[in-house]
Image (cartoon, rainbow, N blue to C red):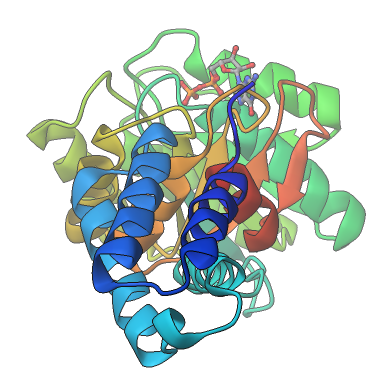
Length: 296
Ligand code: GDP
């Protein structure tokens, strides 16, 4: 087990307080520990720098050097800035517009898009009493549409019947028509992924967006994504315009730094957290819990 950042900071400042006075250099040393902890938690380098600047400014403003318990004060500032950056409150999915509400799921292959689509469908059906329809727009991976149908049967949510050889836009049109005709409240569109970001993928997502005019575009991202998280979130947000983020694999042993990186570069809320393969393993985002995890 490694020592938590809070313990380390308390240690540093306790030593210093006994010496009688603190200097700017002492605070700088503490900030170095903060930066190291964030990098260990897989927060992207640029984000670490800007985070550290924010903490420093606030430490100067709060006059940490002259305070009675500088260690506690710095720990509180780090925590506050972390929670502020992550977003203080949980933002719900936007499902209360005039139906059918369209939710588009985007992300790289293997991020957990299809699994998360089914989890969200189950949640909206059970908690919000919505009539939900799911449709897979992934025509690249042969088994993708069938995979969603299997999950649909498992969570008892309808999936759009599979018609071979249709384009993603044709499937999106069928889904919208079915929703209007059959009175669904919410349509979840599960899109195709790729192993990495490329232009054809971004173009396909942009086309689906302009065609389907979704109310929500959720970026599904693996919490174990390290330095790539910034690129991923930036690209999807710039080209497709996401409305929120779902972080998957939070049950893994990653420290969740991707949450901070992606929120920082896009300003878009992390709406949900996936914590396993089971269909119930989906939680509301809780900034405090992630902050604690990042700080170790
Ligand atoms: P997609 O390619 O983005 O649609 O990814 P899938 O939904 O097919 O998921 C890929 C794999 O990750 C599957 O084996 C899922 O069961 C698994 N998975 C998805 N979400 C989570 C999660 O939150 N935690 C864990 N441990 N596994 C997950």
